[in-house]
Amino acid sequence: MLRTLIVFLLPTGVFGQAQFQFTTFTIPGALTGEGSDIDNPGRVVGHFTTPAGDTRGFQRETDGSLTYLTAPGDLGNPFDTRANGLTFNGRVVGTFYDTAHQTNSGFLYANGQYFTFNAPRQPPHAGTVLNALNERGDFCGYVQAPPQFNATAFASENSQVFYFNFPGAISTTCNAVNNEGLIAGTYVDRHGVSHGFTRTQAGLFQAIDLAAATTVVQQVLCTPEGNLQAGTEIRGLNDQGVISGHYFVPADQPGLNATHAFERLVNGTVWVIDVPGALQTSGGGGINSFGQIAGHYDLDSTCREALYIATPATRP
Image (cartoon, rainbow, N blue to C red; front, side, top):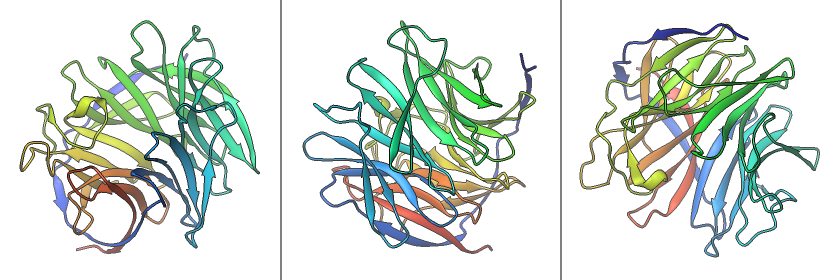
């Protein structure tokens, strides 16, 4: 068993408004969409919802062409397949509703084939969400087991799966793993506030909270989990240790303009990412080695969404 050490990081407080170039796009016929990850060539994976209530995964090539992803075990009514991460050689991981087993399962998509993954040593009806995969084949995500179905993170190392929770958390999700074996994710405390974290291969935790993030749980429009949100969420991590995600601030109006995406450099500097003209930029997704970030933003209060790629242009 790996030894666990804990280091609590002081809140990050060096904020700036860097210049980003934005490529925005929508999925034809979609109501909402989320850009979950981006690789070095600039391909993006994520998911979108349709007016019929179906959720489908997608992979967007650099020329804008789209491949739609639906795992074979997802038989619909409604469909629910989500692409969460990808590697430089085009392997995609994600999760789908496994109709036969009536729970979530993970999947790997490679060379046109799907492979199902369920977290080992779990009771019946435990759900598996597979979020990330690195070039070495290490992966991570989280499992939700009965009866509470709170999230417990898992990761693999040398083909062995292990489980962990941030100490004191009521739920922990692993959202990214880089080629150095560093893990990043989000945990939720007993007050319902989200916090980012990293975990080394030696089991060393760092909590990461942005200084501008509110710790007061509030209603935030166009977000899941009952629309009650607060704190910092980490969604991406590259090989240089640069982190991406989003954080919640006190709303300008009830539920509005309460989220901002961010990029956090290894020296603790945080660059805020807001798509021009957006109601709110709520999805800081994955980040590649060039600092490009994929995500999504809300177009208006009806929660129509579009997706973006933010490319760093200048640094003040």
